[in-house]
Length: 416
Ligand code: CAO
Image (cartoon, rainbow, N blue to C red; front, side, top):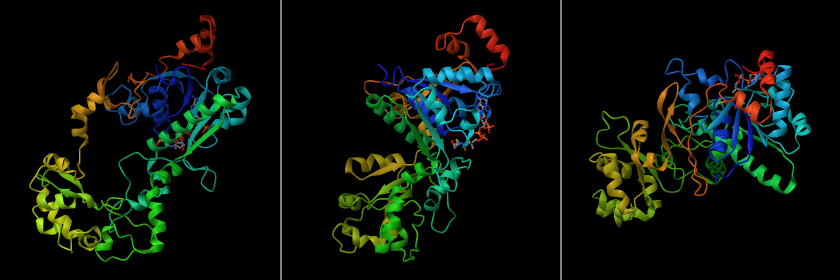
């Protein structure tokens, strides 16, 4: 049985943040009806196209397990259909620019009147405040949420990360808000408004950097490499390069083949508990008891020397050999995996994290399956819908329109 079976979601999302959220709800079993503008649909269908004439990977990888309904919500017939859908559904999710739902005539007040049980969930760039009217994309959120100022190297510019923490990260936050609101509805019988602002989502994911901001008042951040290098700290959390965020120093180190392979690197953490084993593995047995190296505090001003020595050793091994040697010794390391390696990794295929999907227009492609595994609600990944693929089916089965009525609706331009 699927956990969210029976929950109907009216999905007004587009691009990435909102679709991430509704795709998760669909994987957990909700019936997600993606409402799209007739003719064009979600703009990502036609963005970064790799197979001419087929929906892009951008779209197909974010819209699995959904049904597509084309509906012009600015057309009078379209508005009437939407009103009926709102009465039938449990959740409406949208990530339009601020004010778009109100301009359509479907702001929170109107939705509550139509269906007091409805949960209306939105992604916006910013929460209430000076920037609430701004349109926002991924990298803007990363910059406004503190990620860019704390990512990159000390002597370089602010840097955005490849992980879509603004879009997909906020979609995840929103999904949690929606299921929480559904849970509360069991008690209260009424819906509520759920808002996930991208800036807030990124700040939440940068929590440890706000921790460090406050720690600066008590002195330099000793676990940052710049401390050991004698570089002064300013008044804000600096960029930490590849330093690990916790109290256990870690860095990215070269492995065999780094000269030609941009990903022949490993992450290596000098966890305090593993220190004696690290010393033995890298052939520095004297460092186990040497007071200059034996304790984490003693090592803090010598991290460059320590990691240089470890790197001299990792450079003689492939990143996978480093993993094979260090794991049994409980030394925390991780190979830097390329997207090619991830796409070919058998174990990820077996768990359903990487899945191969067949699509009528584009053939087979790889996607990321549901990253959260529920033992009693397994997620089967189904291909994304073609534009308007389920329009008639939804109008018939959900709203009970007859064939004649469907013809009239088609003629009105409300769907198509
Ligand atoms: N029928 C009729 N009109 C429709 C429609 C439909 N089915 N679906 C959408 N529209 C209309 C909307 O009503 C809106 O019209 P108005 O501007 O006249 O009110 C219009 O299409 C487009 O909406 P938009 O302003 O949201 O789209 P955009 O491409 O200009 O902006 C984005 C895109 C992402 C910047 C903006 O939606 C946004 O800031 N969203 C919130 C933050 C967010 O989610 N960002 C992440 C996106 S992923 O990187």
